[in-house]
Image (cartoon, rainbow, N blue to C red; front, side, top):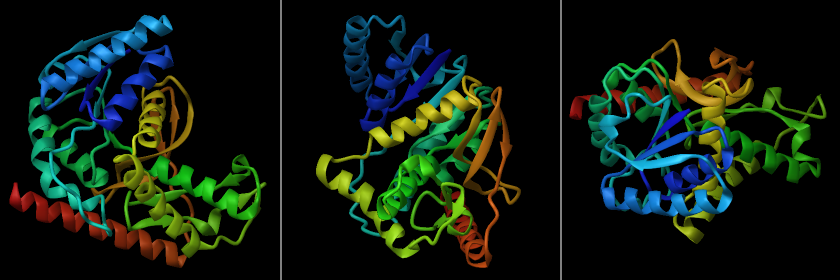
Length: 294
């Protein structure tokens, strides 16, 4: 498997390290806004490869030269200071969109899997897909949200995390939908303290960013999960942002079999359906406004 990695920042560095450790990636091609950072990451990964005995090859290249890769991970970030305390992920839209458009045009008609990491991930996944005509674009975020949900609820109820089944869907952001009505613990319905859970879901990334500057390991794990499922290396269900019938990209459970996706939207109660409709409208409005500006 040949993977392209665009962006050598916090998430890109973590993804590179996970790919070295994974054993299934044969070649990794790295590009970044300043190729100096790409060269630095490649040098660091080369050291890791030698120490761990990995057989992966890692090379600095231009993003436009990644067309033959099986998958490309898009994690670039334009330089800007995000001071938002609400709708934090959406605050990067204006800054990051031109960069994504530029990459989409460089990678026009790309035939592999494109994994969008850059926020706001749902809007930018749609932007990359429509500007590049790539048919296999997915965004990460919902898997991280769902993992945080399981962890938070398990701690609240004092049960093992693996006992919790449930999803967080919709926007990777303030309009995320907690699917409380279909959540189970040990296979049984459970009362979910939705407001308490939502507060913790918002607090976790802020806690990470305030302490170490960026969330990195959770998103990188979500990238690896998305890659292994979408490339047919593992079967099963995961949460990724994908195109809906409305044309909007939303986080949803997707079941993969040999790399072929099947959308598995959960049943929603009336309140959750209204929340998902609001998230859809929010993301569609943001995209429509954006396309008028670029």
